[in-house]
Image 1 (cartoon, rainbow, N blue to C red):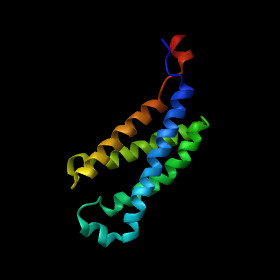
Image 2 (cartoon, helix red, strand yellow):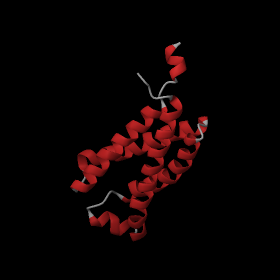
Image 3 (cartoon, rainbow, N blue to C red):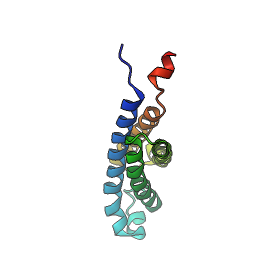
Image 4 (tube, helix red, strand yellow):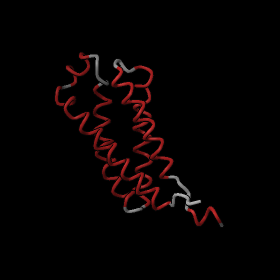
Length: 130
């Protein structure tokens, strides 16, 4: 049975992390441009600080995905940290999201973050069989 190698797991994690981070930046930037008062009074979007955090983590996540793709230790560690923080910041949206779209987005974000972290921690096949 063919198992997933660590190299393939890290590349998969890097692609998922890049796509997730890019989506976060693209999703949050237009709302941030509206300003804090407009976003917080709207009621149908995440709080302003969550949007700012999403953009910051998104930009750092893109850099981390590059490091993870190159299989650099700092990239893997940074990818784990970014996805841990991103998953934790999205988790309240599962319980308290004001719209179904935000509920689904938060649920998918948490699930993708868990998958990326698991892929980054995937053991090397050579070490597992020894």
